Image (cartoon, rainbow, N blue to C red; front, side, top):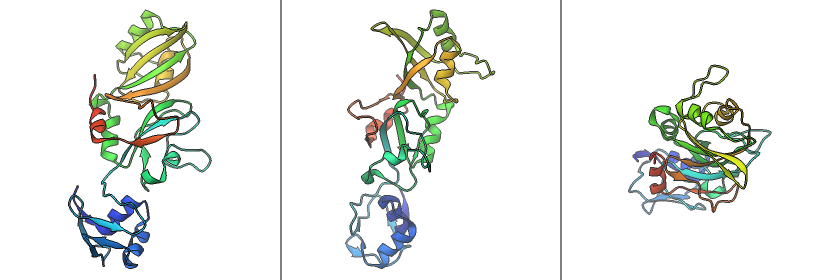
Amino acid sequence: MSIQRLDKIISLNCSVSRRDARKLIKDGKVSVNGLPALRAETPVETQTDKIDVDGFDFTIKEHIYIMMNKPSGVISASDDKNKTTVVDLVPPELKRRSLFPAGRLDRDTTGLIIITDDGDFTHRLLSPSHHVYKRYIARLDLPLSEESVKKLESGILLEDGTQCLPARVEAYENDGVPFARIEIREGKYHQVKRMTAACGSHVEELKRVKIGALCLDESLAPGECRELTPQELDLVFENE
């Protein structure tokens, strides 16, 4: 963290506009290290200074990282006039004005998604060069053959000429129903569905359960979320 303007810190951590933050300061509702704050441009050391804002449970955080168990039917976006977004489901105590999903899941895909306000983190997470694998569990209409698994593991070429990077794949059955555990380190449009379709299998249901070494907290019901711990955040960039 670093030295930042007081109004910016309040806006970021209280999910209010900069104008509202300045009004809180002007109205005498803000103190820094026990003393009334008088100016919006007051410099604040985010690691050591203590800020109190009347009416808010205030904790300085430069960024926030939220794990959500995304439900089906919700889109991976920050805002949409007609559809419910993952950001709409974030509870008030975790809300920030600049939240967005770090990557996307299809509307009908469920499971692990990270919501944040940290652009650098998101770029690192989504770049194929960083080799962050995402694990999906796909329920299929037809099982993947050994030949199909080898094609996916070698980097399959889709019908439209899209070249996929090598994936990690395990085909299995559960009570006679075909499944596949698929790990990819890129996020092309409908990628898992298109990869399996190129092998003659249709995805009936898809869930993301892992990013790097970070597993979805199965205690989270669909639509529920919680803040990631620093230790869990480190897991994102580890691959088993």
